[in-house]
Image (cartoon, rainbow, N blue to C red; front, side, top):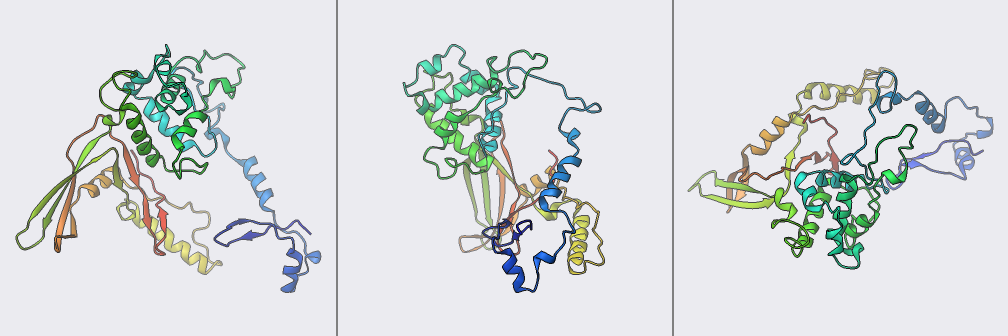
Length: 344
């Protein structure tokens, strides 16, 4: 028989697997599969039921929630090239800024014509090409009735840009999913290098694009005892990392109670308390995260003694990039991501 679902919990698999010797393995435990009868749905059947009963009106056009079709410059999408959503979202964010559009809009092709002949290796040309594709009229013709919205001529496929920006990088050169915040910082670094010889000649302006996001962070260290010496230090950043902690959740009591009840259910399945109850997600307010960032830290080692540390922004950028730091180390000393809500 080959109709049984087999799931492997091994760390290197943790997925459905094929067991060609399933009958022999079950026979070891005294189970004759030829005498067994099917009493429950397979995983494939459950997946089909889920698809049939899914409420697609949440994301699709329906009678009670009509969606308005839009198309135009600035409303053009990027094709997902396979695990490239982190890159697409980052590029769309940056190229939608007025200053970036003004610098890289290249309707007369002057930026690309003034570049090297091997345009596939020129980051300035690739960014100009993307800026024109996303913000120009070429991929945003007027809407027509009955038109196929999935037509490739209405979507920008940044394959050449992806190949170039990921070249030589151990992570971004692969087809695996990556962190958007890391990619934005890496992309700004590469763009700054490319703009050094292009500013004032091929593109307008005298400051790199990353300058719109640069700001200074000042740290103040002071000894907790003795002469109470003070040390100030500054670092240049392009992104503000804001800590998100479970203990700052305003519904922490509800989350803790559910977790405790769920652990009891696992120990005693006959008395289920959380069955049918939706698991509450921790709700952490942004103001609470900012307060934790600005709070004074105690117990910091400084010149051989304990000290306190205070962090603040010394300058403000034109645009402030914010990263919510939700990763932490769990009780097994493994990295984990806090599944929570942070209203912005």
